[in-house]
Image (cartoon, rainbow, N blue to C red; front, side, top):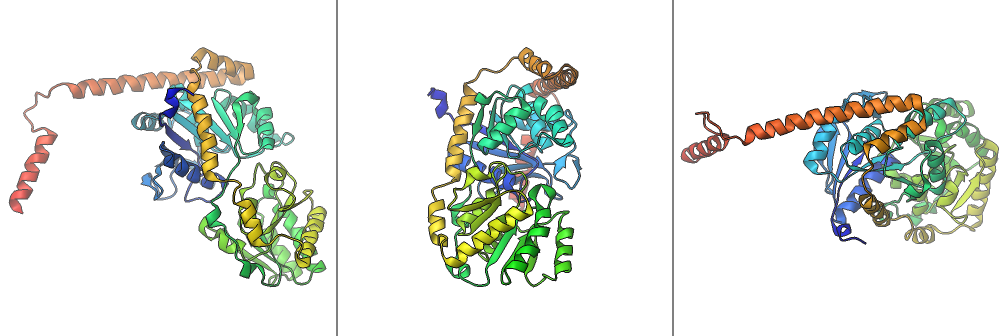
Length: 457
């Protein structure tokens, strides 16, 4: 290991998804940043503004967060990508903070892609973590992979995926070198997800569902699974936490089958209330149709719940059969798997909550994630910077038509960087000249003002 490996780095974690939003990416960035700070690195977070939350904020764990006032689209979950529009601010932050590595998170974050693009144009090393899976059959996934990911990621130095399934997916759709892709799973704070044996023993048996109520999370399956379970097992209750466009069909299902007393909907929960909800149940149901990792099932297992989940994406890698019952992503298979888990609970053949938590405790720890991520950072710092010629060739190797478009973006950004460097040097040179003005200098003004204040006091 080279001596510079002992040097501490300045790392910029970038994503559109961060606090006050709640979710897997937001949690990952928060705890990864905290653990990297504990290891002696300097860490900043770049995200877009949320309402009145703009400018620089300091979190209690030491994180310095830039809430950038870029124009947002949709429901405020991302910025409107303009390629050059964010260059001035990102370059200024990278320069002022002396950033060594820019680490983007989530393929759905336009800010992350722009930040990494500007970073390598400025000669800064880049790392990207993919938290999602994409399909290969639907038009939107194909267009996203071909027009964005394949070109945006081709010049990134290193990649991190949260599961081996996610790695295969990312390598295939973005045509990456597998040797540059690392697998580092998500983690949880175990002390925040402890079981409550008293609540666990209460009856009736309760099934917890906690996810965004969207198609990708399999919310449509709940419309068929819940009435069937309630009909075949007269005492089981459901609690659904989350919100989204698929909430309406679930509400209609409750009306149709008169299940208001057995199916409670609590809406979106802040992260600090997740454990309080999880300990109200004995079984956790995950109906996702695609999932790279699914941190929520780890949190539920740590709280002592048995997991019933669709066997999609990286989910089978996350927990062993002692913790989880897997099913096909259809209503019939999920219903049978859930009934099987209910029978095991009632017969007492499942692990107790405390046993489950103790078995989970050594697994998926944030200090381990930070240590493994640090290895990726140092491997990046060992690499020589790719030349501009090599980077432009990479674009053309992906496809000539869009390769020319991305080459044009690169050349425009490089020209703007040189222009901004010129004006910075001009201002610096001007400010370094001795002043010939008879007006008092700022420092003298401050001293004179202080004397007046002291005289008054």
